[in-house]
Picture (cartoon, rainbow, N blue to C red):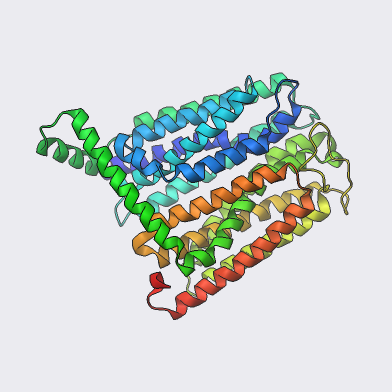
Length: 446
C-alpha cells in the first residue's frame, strides 16, 4: 500500500514537472515571442495574457473545490492538463482570439489543477509521510524551471530575431512535453483510502450513478459555501489584513521574475546577439535560487534560533539589492519597447554577470517570502488552513494579474519603486503579526 502511494506521489510530481516545464518556459519567453511575430494581424500581448491567466485563476479558485469533489482529482488534473496543452499549442499558429480565449481557459484549468493536486497529495499521504511526499513533489516541480529554459538558451543564443520556424520548433517541443505530463495523470492509481470511500458509498446506496453524482455535487456545493463564508470571516481578522501587503507584494514580484525580467534582458540592446539566449539562462538561475532558498530555509527554520522574521528580512534585503542592481544594469524602457530593442542607456554598462546575479537573487528572495507566508498561515490558522491559503492565493494572483497588465506601459524604474514600497510595507506588517503571535495565546481571534 505504501508503494502505491509513493508511486502516485512520484507520478504526480513528474506530471507537474512536464506540464510546468512547458508553461514556465512559455511564460518566461512569450512576450519576447509575441514581439518577434511576423504577423500583422496578431495584436495580442504576452503581458495581458499572463494578467488574464492570474486574474481568472484568482476567482476560479472559489469554484475549483466543487469541481474536484464531483469528478475527482485524477479526472480534474487530466482535463486541466489538456487546457495547459491547448495554451501552448496556440503559439504554433498564433491568432489573437485563440490566444486570449486559451488564457481564460488556462486560468480556470490552473485553479482546478492546483486544488486537485492538494487533494490528491493529502489522499496519498499519512501524518508520518506528508512532509516527505510534499518535499518530493516540490523538488520535482522546481526542476521545471531548468530544462525548458536550457533549451531556449541553446536554440536562441546568438539570434537577434526569433524566426517562425524556430518558434514552431520550440512550442511543438513544449506541447509534446505538456501532453506527456497530462497523459501521466492517467497512470495514477486509486489510493486505498479512496477505494474504501468508494466501496462504502456504493455498498450503502442502491441509487443510480446519476443520483449518486447529484448527491455528491450537492454536498460539494454546501462545503464550498461553508468555506467561502469562512474566508469572508477570516478576511475581517487583523492578522489577514496585516499580512495582505506581504501577500500582495509576493504577487508583484511573482509577475516580475516570471515574465517581466526575462523580457527586459531579451530587449537589452547592449547584450547584442546573446540577449535572447540569456532569457533562458535567466530562467534557469531564477529556478536555482528558488531551489536553494526552499531547501536552505526549510533546514534553518527547524532551528529555533532562526525565526520567520529573520528569513523575511533576508528576503527583503536580497530583493532590494536585486532591484537596485537591475535599476543600474537594465535600460529603463526595456519592459515597454515592442518592435525594437531598448533605446535608452542604463547607468552602468550592462553586465551579463550582474543580470544573472539578479536572477538568482529574485528566486532566492521569492522563496523567502513564500515559505514564511505558508509557515505563518499554517501556524496561526492551523484549524482553518484551507480557507487561509485560499485567501493568500487569491490576493497574490490578483496583484500578479494587475502587475502583468501595467508592465507593458510603465518604465522599469517605476515598477521597481512600487515593489520596494510594497515590499517594505509588507515586511513591516509581517513583523507585527509575528510579534503578536509571540505575545498572544489565542492567535485566531487576533
